[in-house]
Amino acid sequence: MSADVQQFQVDLRGVVDLLSRHIYSSPRVYLRELLQNARDAIAARSEVDGAGGSIRITPLSDSSAEFVLRDDGVGLTTAEVADLLATVGRSSKRDIFDMPRSDYLGQFGIGLLSCFMISDRIVIRSQSAKGGASVEWTGDADGTFRVVELEERLPVGTSVHLTPRFDADDLLRPAAVRELATTFAEFLPVRVIVETPGGEREITRPVPFLGEGGTDAALEYGRDLIGAAPLDVIEIGEPATGTRGLAYVLPYAPPPSARQATRMYLGRMLLSERAADVLPDWAFFVRAVVDSSGLSPTAGRESLVEDRALEHVREQLGAGIRRWVLELGLTAPHRLAQFVAVHELGLKSLVRHDAELARFITRWLTVETTHGSMRIDDLVERFGHVRFARTVDEFRQVAGIVPASEVLVNGGYLFDADLVASLPEQYPHLTVEQIDVTGELDRLDPPPLDDRAAAVALEDRASAVLAASGCSVLVRSIDRTDLTGLYAADPTVLRAIDRGRTRGITNALWGGVLSRIDDATGAPRDDAQTARLCLNWSNPVVRTLSGVDDEAVFSRTVQLLYIQALLAGHHPLSDADRTLMTAALTDLVALSAGVRTDGFPFDL
Image (cartoon, rainbow, N blue to C red; front, side, top):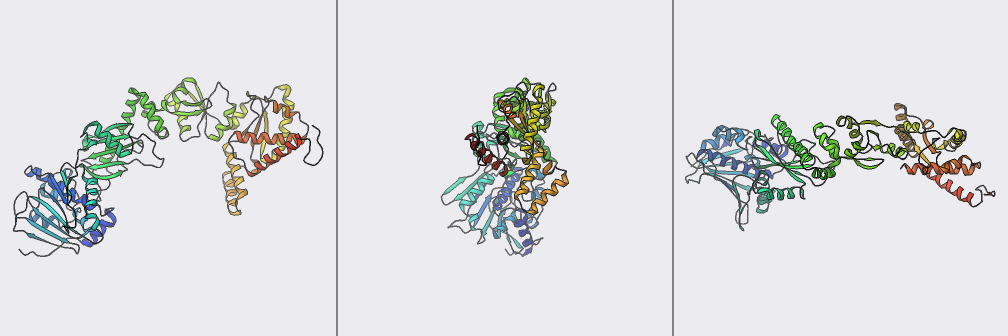
């Protein structure tokens, strides 16, 4: 029977370019689109006569020059083929069968045209379950198509025939077809069979994350998904949108840069391996697998439309994960402790924004203190007043002078300062105080009144020795006889000192930039940087030093005490500091040997 050549209602070349460049990420999606159309046709036939339920794929091979995908779905009549396959963007599922759009995966009418990314010609042969003649539709990449009625009667269903372009041959061969069919359609509720010269292979299998196969199957799937046995498995879902699945708790801490990612299925067909918008961002400690029948895909069907339905699903799935954490704290605290140990850093970030979760999680978190690493629960139980340093530098500078009866928390690690500052919200009896270095030195007692004159003289002489190092000296009594001294500088001074050191090793351009930064911020200039060395009057060396008359011995000893305090506080030594240390050691060795460095004998 002759057929009239007709024109598509669109510029097909432009559509194919749009599909390949802007909608689909890869030509590999051609098989997903064909499988999706076939699955929809089978679903439609079940409404007509209750039959149908299989898809067969014959890849390209040495004995066959074309790829064929057959389904036993509802099929198409001549009028439906001419009308619907020629119109891009029209939904045959809704318009022909008058079914709710959510019952089917195909929603945009462009799925078939994705085949033009791998073939210059698409041939469709179909027999409708509603009767009528069998029909053949042939579409070409030049923008034309033709429809003919066949004399022979085909089985009910549709077959798609593709002859590959020269650059797409591999995508239609058995290895690629098996891989793509398994990736996209292994959980479809219909049989998907790949036929090859080596025999048939059924792709579809039970869905472990929807409860098919039992607990063991779900755990095995989780091990394959995350590469290790999960700490736990959480059932998540939102019934109104037909969304459900499993969240696997990671047994390792994900990288800090890792984003929440979910393996997402729509109607049991893979949408994305790493959908980033299904779970809340804070659910970093799980990897989820979710299927939905009520969420909407984008045109490329590789992500979800950000609409109110997705927002609601995200909230409900997050609530399910939060509920798991809360129940774990109530029923299995030892497992919660294990979970916290793995994901502590991320949880510290999380509890800042979730007051309900914080009530159960915070007690299990740990912080570094002057009494060692402590759990928050133990910290609050032992101390009614908690002091914390905002930075690691501040903690190191003053940790050595904190009385044993008190506690100081190192808040310099990520989120720890905010965590400690928020503790009174959960523990009303607790008071929290942030310390500063200057204030801690001011709390120290001065030397006894009888020793005050000697101590003041020591301060003046030692300050003169360290003036070139930008450091002043004060003398205080610290209840630790083994501690000679403490180097102390608040963060502003430390930053100014660092900029000054940087100016000394950079060119004029960057040195000028740093100077302008100081001017703009009102930071102290080099001559105003007042780091302090606090010498401990309770230490025998310091008291002996106050009575040393020899200026060489005095100067070198003060310089070494300064270097020792820097190293004890984990402060980096500048080139000038290292030179100072070397010179002081050299001179003291010479002095101890009875030889002055200026060549004159020295009698010890």
